[in-house]
Length: 400
Image 1 (cartoon, rainbow, N blue to C red):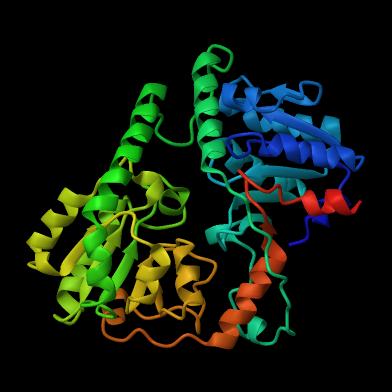
Image 2 (image 1 turned 180 degrees about the vertical axis):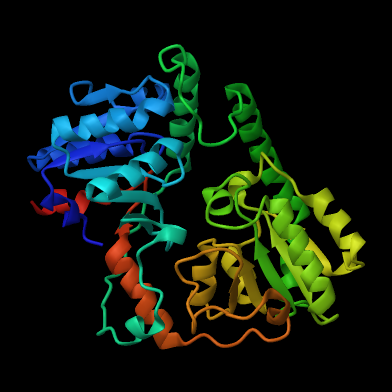
């Protein structure tokens, strides 16, 4: 996507952005192009990372009054485009519904559909409610789309970590200022968040030692003899909103049950933990208990930090809820079964039969369809950059 897409609008409203200063930098970019920009903060984390108090307002009331507040704000400020990060936050759900009713364009930012070089900026909906066409004929009939090689995203983990710590610290310190703020996930105290981050660092070091043997096993003895099951973050909107599963545990149990009944006895499954969950969740006991229940303990692996592309390329197939890992698998020509709602769950790309059938017949991926789909997604929804690295609008700034 060309970042100039936004420049056709004159007056913007920014709601909650990713943790950190990305939305502040975006506001500066828009103002430098002569646009009016307003920002609404909902908590202390929003407040401290948007130090432009002239155009920033705080919503401190109960969420029941948010829709009427927003409707008045849009009318008074003559807003003609709304920008927000994620479609799953309570305030954003209401804002999206209102924008549709008022026919006001809105763009949703998210982590990239195609990683690591891109972030998503999509108008009208993302993920399970994306407006991207689902008809394979549409993509097959597209003219050739040439996508330039992406610039490095320059992502910095320390920048992301600092942004998260700063956000949650000021959520706590300024809680008195935003007493009615409604969290979009089950809220954990700041001290618990720090504890889990520290535990994540320790576990990462331990897994590097304890799991080294598994990479050799999975790329040699068990090469093309296992299915990869990448797990998603336990409270990710992809699970809570864009799927029919009650929890990650629910998903794991159904995978193990189906695999035990329908897969070849010569095959294995490998569950891979999401790295963000490393310090917060550990599913080992649950997986071991479920595997034992269905008598397949010796055919189930649970790993954490093994190299994902290597695991994908050496697997028979990949089962996802709706993770972007599915797109990575398709890129490597590895068959995919989608268990949720994903933009790439299209006939000719992913397996359209049942999970029970996937274990024995994974089908084929139409490479032309994938290539056209992949390039179209980049062209229409992806920005080359990072929320915690290279600013994706920097090329426009430099070229002005």
